[in-house]
Length: 140
Ligand SMILES: [Zn+2]
Image 1 (cartoon, rainbow, N blue to C red):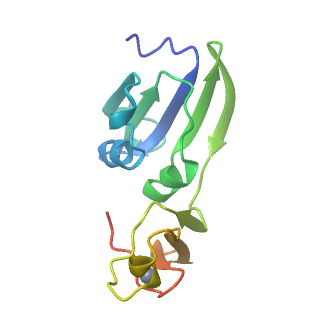
Image 2: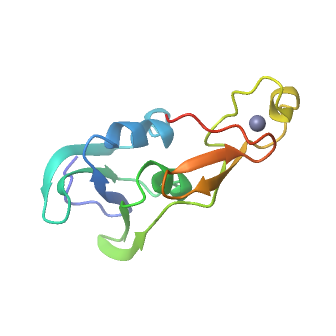
């Protein structure tokens, strides 16, 4: 795969160095069977070192996951070889089915069909809590 010639896909840029692997895992890119290029420790004018993920396929990507792992990341959407859209993601207020509550007494542990919802409770600390029992999410 030529990483510079994506026709239809997504480039996640300005990921803090070291976060690309985590993002790759949380986005579930592994199991999709699409071409993905990961560049780690690239030199960035803005952030010193950065990671980049290039997905050479028109697949839905969970932007909340990107914002959760790295609120400073930018997403470039490529269509027909051109940059169609550039998005700054930021920290999501709510995460659905990304984090899982570890409290065994939480209602989500008993009722499996419930969505796992976490809300941002402290932006400065990047702290998320379970919507149902307020258990703090452990960092992934
Ligand atoms: Zn809970």
